[in-house]
Structure formats: C-alpha cells, structure tokens
Length: 117
Image (cartoon, rainbow, N blue to C red; front, top):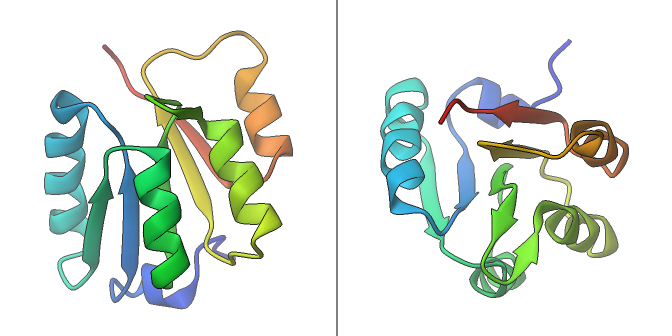
C-alpha cells in the first residue's frame, strides 16, 4: 500500500518543492523530473511563498526542506494540518538533530529523508 496519492504514484501530479538552497534544489528538481516526467513541479524558496501558493492551488505532494529562511519543517506540517491540505509531506534535510525525524513523523510527515552533505 502506497502512502502517496495515486496521481503521484502514476507520475501525474502537482508537486510543491519548498527549499531556499539552490545547491539542493537543482539536483532534486532534476531527479523529480526524471522520476515523474509528467508532474508539474513548483518551487517556492520560502514558507511565505509556499503559503501563498497553497492558498491558490491544490498539490498532490509537498517536499519541504528541514530548515527554511522563515520557518521550520514543523511549521510547514502544522500549516498543512491546520488548513486541511491532503497532500503528503516529505521532509528532506542534510542534518537533523537527534529526535527530529521521530518528531516530524509524529507531526504528520510521511517520510524524512536525510541527504548526505
């Protein structure tokens, strides 16, 4: 059983990628385009931009950086929950403090991906 909506699993999805770091953003976007070639991928560099986007459009999947210039991934998860957004949230980070992955999963993330530096 997949934790992802069928549109994401089938590659026809709207993906919101929230990350301010260009060094992370470009390779992840390339990988997403390779894995989900039919997906519509939107990139927001801040939580504020993501809130604006989510207020105007539906998304099927949210990929959020562990740390944003104006928020944390817990803020993103809280916003998604409080606004009844059905999209699953995957948090990705280079480094997370001890206990953070468990806290993120408890807050509603479907996965926490730690990428090597």
